[in-house]
Length: 111
Image 1 (cartoon, rainbow, N blue to C red):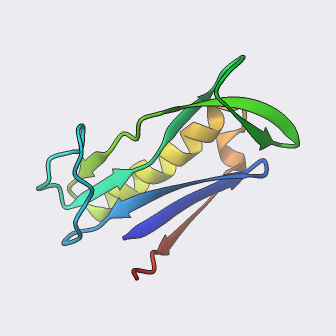
Image 2 (cartoon, helix red, strand yellow):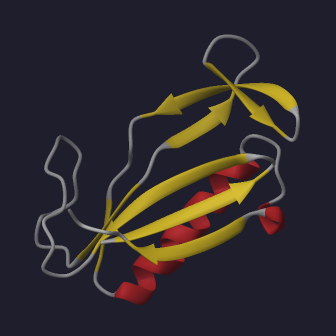
């Protein structure tokens, strides 16, 4: 299991990439369980009112969250590319340039 983390504007978003042989979450909307790589991460966007207040670049931004959108992939490279793009897109949706997002990938510590 890999954690793909994006950081920018004083906030962080982390998603999970389940790798071949790992048990991905099973819930409504989850991809075909035969997919060797499964990416799961929140999606959010800025709203005028309501939502959850987040501090972004020192300013309060109202953010609404959507249900996680799991996606299945055939290769690790496809999954990592899509995960990085997804994280950058979420920051773009709250007004942060995608190039300003620092994306890291790390192996999750299983307990």
